[in-house]
Image 1 (cartoon, rainbow, N blue to C red):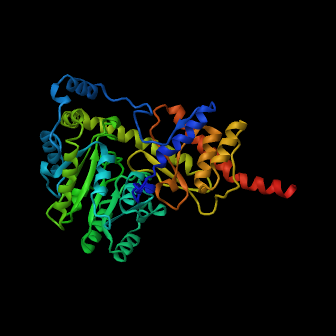
Image 2: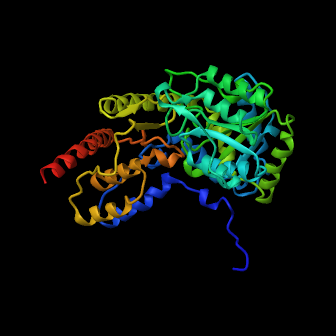
Image 3: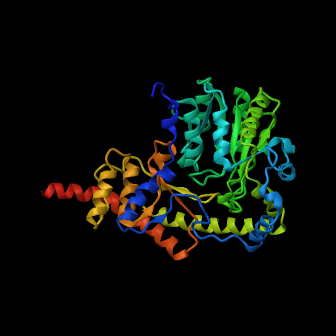
Length: 442
């Protein structure tokens, strides 16, 4: 072509959570059965929506308005409902004009970064959620900027690292956090959030908080929404119904905007609304459903049941993996993920797992060439057991490990999966000694 049409940041668009599916699909074609632990879809893992929620959606399907366009920012009554829910928390008070709907948070994240000045950077956590890290890196054309989450402190942010990076890099215009966190399951105590707000205040940067799991904090832990602590700092919270209803196929999310009048923030937010206007609006039916579902007295019972379910599974997973030598685990406090971290220097490029099927073994051996050592383990686990997890280095992270979910509804299958992964870790780490012994005898 006479002109290069590829965006400078296009190669930054990576999503390991989905990319590993291509590898697993290759194994399926070879006859393997796959146990999917790579993606956070409760419905795919067997969770059933309560009938009363299905009845609300079914009723809306019969209404003609569900098939029409809605206002660009979203259904006014729904935004009014959500603004009232925010204001019940205390802290910063918003109106319906501070809420903008998108076709899922993926759509919101893309626009948040696409319409930001290219030289303005947003620093986010590492491990990072791929949608955020890829979108931020793609908009700038450079690697995503990160601050460290500390696995020896329940995966909470290293605030000294965060502040130092902001202090010495004046291109940083915003701080991103995810609470509860994906991929670690960490929940940020209020005092940590307040310290992050203080850093934002002192360096005059805005804040983005992904709160898609905000209502899935286990009862044993407490946190705060960004609206409760943000005070005069401009910022936004990202929320949706994909994970907490759960209704991932709705592709329905929104942002709550705080302090639009500060630091030229209103101009930036107007650009997001204008961008949405070019699409006309977001999907109608889920927006009409939100007040009826979230406002129903049975909804809180639904949330409490799901929180208790995930908390029990988090404790169960922690018991299993904390008994494995060579890894570091923290018990999740919210959401439905767990990160298993390999200790330093326990992985190498000689470790293997037994794969009896010759075709499968050759397929895996071809895929592991030049990959990170945690990805090598993940591929061998996939080829040996059919269990598909996500390598931690796929989350914009130098630390080696993997993420699994707490979603499997079949108790027997879930426990088999976790025990099989634990046994595979032991066998994989032991395989170095076996290789060395074999080499010595030869």
